[in-house]
Amino acid sequence: MSRPLRLAYLSLETPRPGQASQTHIDEIIASLRQSGWQVELFATTRGGASARTSFLQRLLDYGRVQLALGRRLGEFDAVFVRSHFMALPLALWARRRKVPVVQEINGKPADIGVTYPALKPFAPLLSWLYRTQYRMAGHLVAVTEGLAQWARGFSGHDRVSTVSNGANTELFTPEGPRADITGRYVVFVGGLVAWHGIGTMLAALREPAWPADVRLVIVGDGIERGKVEAAKTDPRLLWLGRQPYDAVPALLRGALAALCVIEDQDGRSAAGVAPLKLFEAMACGIPVIASDLPFQAELVRQADVGLVIPPASPSAIAAAVATLADQPDEAGALGKNGASYVAREASWQQRGREIDLILRSQVTEAGR
Image 1 (cartoon, rainbow, N blue to C red):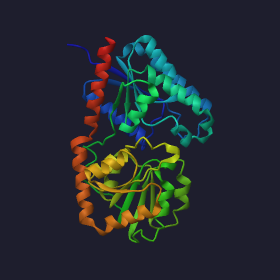
Image 2 (cartoon, helix red, strand yellow; image 1 turned 90 degrees about the vertical axis):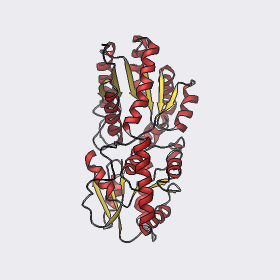
Image 3 (cartoon, helix red, strand yellow; image 1 turned 90 degrees about the horizontal axis):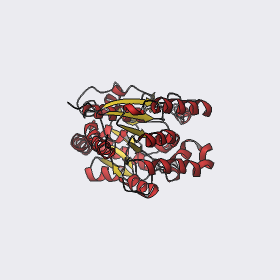
Image 4 (cartoon, rainbow, N blue to C red; image 1 turned 60 degrees about the vertical axis):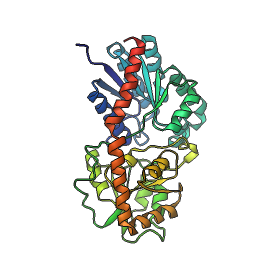
């Protein structure tokens, strides 16, 4: 009997409970294990925009994790990297040891300047660090087709595939308990960061079109928490902070709709967005209110799972909430469409099978 294939998963973006990055990492690892892989995670512990750690602490953390993996590279058949500009040392080390590397791309290099404005002057260096890694990679995996097209041009090769996000269809289902929240509400689940439209959704709550009996429930934390705290004087706003992963489905099931109102700040979303919150809300059978950005808007329209609105428009969010509040039968039909789509095409098991095929082909090509 042949031995199981072994995979090292490298994440220099620190996974934190309640954040999409940790959910994505955990679900991909679980699905690959179901496909027969032995997976070991190598992750930092001091990163993140809200971690309040110094750059030196993060730099040492980057080095520590890559050194730990580098010393054990011979134990693994492949390395799966959650793309990060500081992962170049490991990429070079793996190339020298002839261990295939698959890079997962969740955004462009310019995105870093949106989260960390102080790094914008270093944009050329960051682009070089990413490009060098992408050119060496055995394969690139992008979460949207627009991002995959960009990656082909940026890296200079066609070893690129699209594997989008998904939902845990055992946890996120239409059936099950609902959150104990009084009255009707719409919900946002995600990091409190600028491009998620936090300020815009708070402004929507003050729009005349927003139904007086509908609350806005925000689940998550991040660098935009100050805006949420300042708006808590409105009794229709309920901020729950970060919640355990397994508590999110009940919050979604009880909602009138979920907000996926990502904004295209500095062009960071021009290649498309495929947020976990979109798939998880759909899986729970509720309609989504999504901004008109590539991939998510196309999915919402084609699968008929919600309403598409212009980005960064408080009045459009309020009007969409009012439409769904006034048309419960239509909202229910949209929700059913979403649950059917995710169960059929967007489970993490499906995503894992897609990545499994890519990894196995890389191992075969490397002769390992």
